[in-house]
Image (cartoon, rainbow, N blue to C red; front, side, top):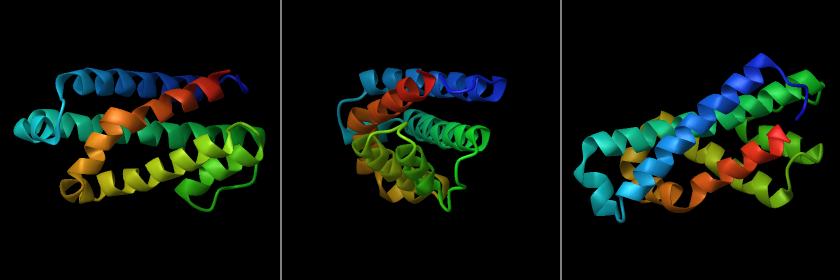
Length: 138
């Protein structure tokens, strides 16, 4: 792992808890109808997705600051900086950039109109964050 520090480890723990919640939710739903029929599950999915993605961005920023890398210009750029420094593959970096965009939808309540995207995140995309976590904790 990069320079181990308390904040980075706390962010990693927060992400791990959110990923565990996402896995639990994922095991309970099979379709968009399943996701939409329980408002509590829908909000839990949204909130866990936000926490997991935000944690990745915060961890990336922490690594960048600790290592003295160039300052990212946008949230998406966090992952470009990490890619430039060899911490992420281009494929993983691009997927994380997409998730940074999805995080904006979650923050601004656009997720209400993108429930299919939330389902895709639950069924396919949250594993990208598991890969990120593994990469940065090595």
